[in-house]
Length: 461
Image 1: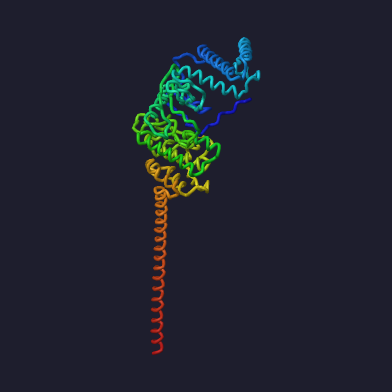
Image 2: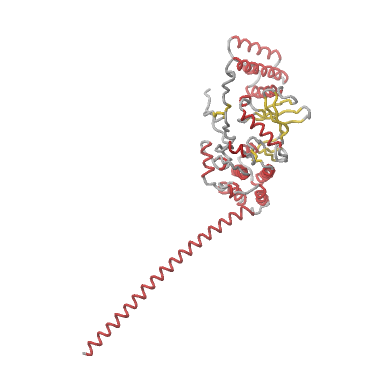
């Protein structure tokens, strides 16, 4: 089977480009710079480490297969002997591959077993935690479900991939996420517990959310009804207000970062791009770089402006709400650059024009949230919440409605001024016409008097 080229996922955070990292032009992913002073990763040391890693995973898979009754110990032993024979023949077949080849397990079961084995292998490197499986994986980290043994509670652990551990910038950003999350304590924000390093692993322990993401719901149901979307976005706006009050900008609000518990509580996740408003050094270092997710990024983030304010998060939340109630993103394109250009220049199609079932109120709110100019958006989440709660109560949003009404009145006033100008022009023309008529009348009268006088003189002779 030929491999397909990897497509850009515009729902994922756009690749960062820190100093000391280079971007893969094919995948668009950012890789740590090569360590020219270190050992060749393709040399014998790298091969030995890979061999040990594979052997450990095979050992765990063999034990789990027997424990779960998928194969007997004799069948596993038979596959191990086949694996050793394959190595002698210079064929690289793992225990898992041979279990599938002998039809003891399926390919899908093998994939799950490998995830569990990798989680257990990693867990052996993080004292105090037992990893139970993989929850998800993004461009920058893998997230595991785990048990914290000391407190007997389920947590989520984000682990930085080893390929990024040689980059100081990646490691620092990973710890910065933990520090940012630790400053926040709000029921609608995923709680941070710990961040640290164990062996070769950098890890970040956080609250485990037993549920799904808003993105999962959009994929499954296409879109939300207006009331359900408002309930979620109100909670996230409250979370953002909490973060903004403490000087933090999230910078990556999107459906994949909005988690929903089984009880319906919405939680803002992933502080990986969060930045303190007071961190001028980071702002200058990141100048000109677009940090964010293409489908939901604000225009000022696209431009890489230094002064990123809470208005950027409000824009991204507006783009997220648009996607939730319309069923499609506000701007689409063939690649990230195309989409981000539309955030800068393209006119937003009002959401109620795409989905006529939406109220005019929610459309007004979204349009104000997604104004190109940050000064024309809500200045803070407190004002945004006033309008969101009004729309939820089936009332006009007082701030957005007033803003739109003001714009409409200004337009009407401008039209009236233009009309008055036209009327004045018409009246001037009419006055000119009357002047010409009067002049002609006087001339005709003068000629008539002259004619009568001439006739009288002739008759008197």
